[in-house]
Image 1 (cartoon, rainbow, N blue to C red):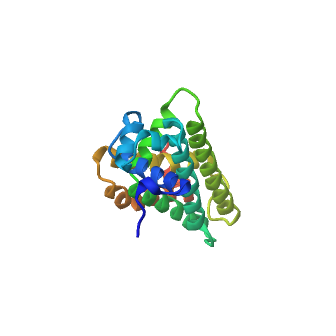
Image 2 (tube, one colour; image 1 turned 60 degrees about the horizontal axis):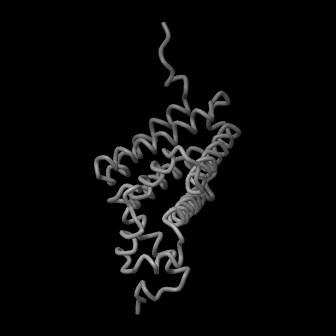
Amino acid sequence: MARHPKHLPSEERQAATIQTVITLLAKHHPGELTTTIIAQHMGLTQGALFKHFPTKDAIFQTVMEWIANTLLSRLERAIEGIESAPAALEAMFMTHAEFAAHHPGIPRMMFGELQKSRASPTRAIAKTLLLRYRAMLIKLMQQGIANHEFPSTLDMDAAATLFIGMLQGLIMQAVIAEDMEQLQKQAPGVFSIFLAGITHPESASPATS
């Protein structure tokens, strides 16, 4: 028998809070999401919620930690055992697209935190996630160059920026359209154009007169 949220152990309560926040963020801007809304959605009082999280910032920090750990672990599993760098990059791209499509509240939180001017633990986690993500991409591209799958002249920094930017663009458009299904539908075509560009950069270069 499932236990009522009011009677969950601490770790389960924290996990339930994380999932509640992610669910609510699909419909609420992070700045509009209050501890009152979170507690009401969970059938709790604010006092009960504050036993586990002293502030809203503490809740958001825990949620961001879950996002970072979950996304990176899924990406690592997705590319495990794939020897081809292009195939591994594709697995990363599609896995990330699927993750965002299934958790539409996460992009709202990521964009919201990275747009803040003030430093915070939550923003620091988001920035670290991007750095680790970028490092995974660079490593795969280095592998691809070593295996002659990508040209030695490949600008890996630019390619990593483009990879991340494509996903951000797809995700933002899906969020604005309130249609996360389009994200997974469009991802394969977008990735194929990206792969053609980094595999045969000369064909993607502007024509010169």
